[in-house]
Length: 262
Length: 274
Image (tube, rainbow over all chains, first blue to last red; front, side):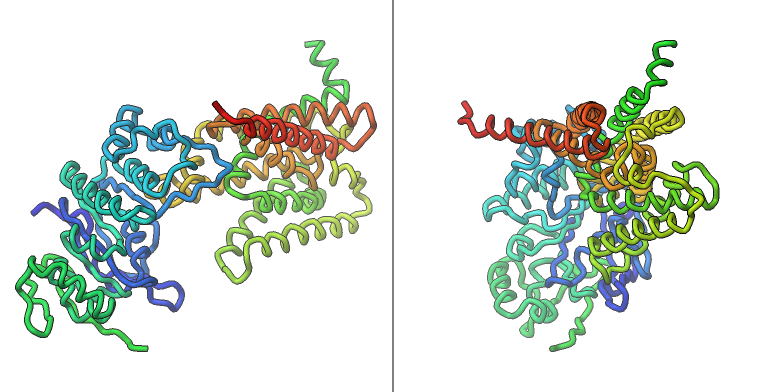
């Protein structure tokens, strides 16, 4: 396989005394879609901000491929209402040509909004605009922070579908944070369950049986996901342990979880 | 040249030409104050100007330079303090704004040999503008407008979404610093005309007025310059004819323009649109 776009080794981030990201390892290649899931405050956003280079790590290493172009889709665009801005102007600020901007908007299905004010977009339209803004830079790596926030259920599935298509078209790597467990399980290649450290990681169908996953998200969630995926996978034992040879694809391998109970 | 010379010999025209120069830079910079919610920050820097004046007498440097140096030091101090999040930013700004003003007043009172017109510094003075001030204003205007032109895209991007800008390689921190330097410069050159207590008004009110009519950031900056011109020309005429203090007259005119624009635009939008 080609050289990794991003490789992380033992990445640790502390805010003062608080350990936010604890010795995370992962590597991402072209064509990979990795989804990070985990409870609130698990360090998901901090982890991707470190990958983006806008959060300094406390220790560990990050290696990015040379001349890596990153397309970033932030959680939302909270624009001051005093700043007048049209979709067109926002797209052109990427420094790309109008034709490129228009085709990126068309690709995410919001070309009709070219002349609209950014302030008047719905949640879903805003996400698609941000995606187009990331797309127009022809990224090698697409990083998305909860891309389906504020998008209705039908829209969410379509959005994840679109992200997968874009991965194929651009042959880029994708790393995203998501809360939509069901959709993630259906749409992603690999899942990393983060709770400061990597609780468990692997293919979606396997991971829902992982004891660490069950402990993090609770049995009802895990069981509903297991049912959802039952027909995909047959390789786990009676105790729910993953027999995941696939998990080793991630540099993280498959770690057991050490949660403190409270 | 003789016409220009005659104009510059007349204090009213000197003030007007100077005021228009100030409006030229206050327009676009004021937009950034509004967009980035830096009104209180600008106030804090402006209030430190008196301290800068005291300082420039103490180390005998030109007034403008002393004011710029103090503003920059204060801005840096603010950046350092705000990293330590024990105090909310507005509390911190409130402390520093008024302390800087008070320390400046106390420091000046310790210098009885220094004869300055305190009211003029606080509220502006139509008569105070000399040729040297005009040089500072237009020198500053050329510098600031060229900087803004070159840095416009990066400044705008980091105002819209700081993290997105960073990922795209915009030097966000350096731009923030440059923006603060530009604020310090505009305070130094505008201080004599509008006074340290009212400078922020000249930054904010024309920009806010322009927002009502603008559809792009550039339009808003240009319209803010126009409304700044109106405020300065109207205010100085008011001051000249009615013998009112220059700074407050300019701000009153700016406020009146703001009310007229928002009032009429409000009526327009209240009508059912076709």
